[in-house]
Image 1 (cartoon, rainbow, N blue to C red):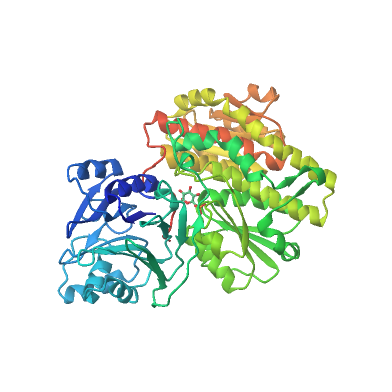
Image 2: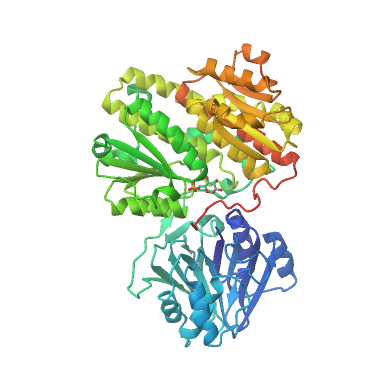
Length: 608
Ligand code: G6P
């Protein structure tokens, strides 16, 4: 959700805040604002729209102060306009706050504060917090923030400044990510490292219930109950170039085209062809526990949930264990049946998704082992799970997930292989799978060469109102993911279904205006899916088939064919998803949509 950044040091704060906010824009982009401590005064500039619009409105102000905070918003309470944009201020305009998260008891508190004479100007939950701090403020910002936080329920990552204590930023976290960047006589605070990586790679991650007090010389960390805590300063491993577009018009396209490399990175140092085995350092000491499992539960949200579905098929096939997949938002509230012989694997690119994180905490309460598959190193889920596997694909900036999806499937495959080799699988069988895995990046490269052809298809069908995506087996979740990509960024209504289910409803929608994307590769259900294609053609539907190279027969039935190279059935999603990512991307371009910042979406959903 929202992105936050703060700076205190010897440089001018404004450019640092604006550049930081640009890096964070993928977290939310409906309005933005900054608060600067400027010559003993508190200056606030807010603007609906994107950071470039904020940048234009602050340009004339010529701020030179070296303390400030900035925010890019994803609206939860109140429309995205100037009054609801952060920072919010108290009645006397001495204090300013930026906030990521949700204050659940805000309406009770607001009524109480109104009775005490406070005046509110926005519809946000955040504004009550700054008035609450004002209630407690007696020239001790740290203490006032602490007292105010004791009154609120909900989640927050906040930065607060006061014009009466201009040499200080107070930060606090509960449920929304926040880290402190450590420079030389300068400190940063941000909701993620990409905002500050240009200036420092040394960061300390705050945990829930912790706060930090930053000044020009040092930063101090405590719990919100005033107990000192020591934080380790860690080094962020990614480079600036990984969070730049690198010549591509959009991050999403760059991330799609980077997949040969990111899949390689995700396997690097993990596959041992000589003995047909896998090494996943994070899981090593937990292998016995994993091997004793009688059931596996996978839980996640969004695209990560789709890779969990593929994981279900792979793990069941290779381990012969029951595997359940659940949306994290459902899992956390439905009193799931867990025991110490059930292992739970959560999947999250960001490692911050609120529902997935809550699922982790539920599982821990029930004392089942919970493992994580995350991309963002040091993220909350990565830190709160027992152990896990990182994707190692670098930051994913495009809001629609692409390279994280293929890496998640690659990791799930590696976990399945690791466990299967210890249970029943021969070294020979392991080697065969590893050889196929190692060949995937080159095969993805080949598919990427079809980009122009896929662009033409997008031009042909980009004005459709609906799309249907159908697949079977391992490629049923790919149909779901293909449809999700299409609706996320092109706003075309798209649905994914298991192909055989088409007859139970979606077939009613088929006419000459309905493009139907079939994932029809040569696997054990190929003949069945060909029958489904016939059923669509009999009703004049337009068929786009993703098929296996060399399948000439399918050309007679489908209107358009996109060929992908042959691979093992359970690896096929790594190939079949790529043309569907490109199709969605080009359809969005044809329709003039903002690919990297689709309307209403956010990259990291840190509210329920
Ligand atoms: C948001 C993003 C999706 C992502 C989902 C889960 O909806 O827009 O791309 O798949 O959250 O995020 P996670 O970081 O937990 O994988």
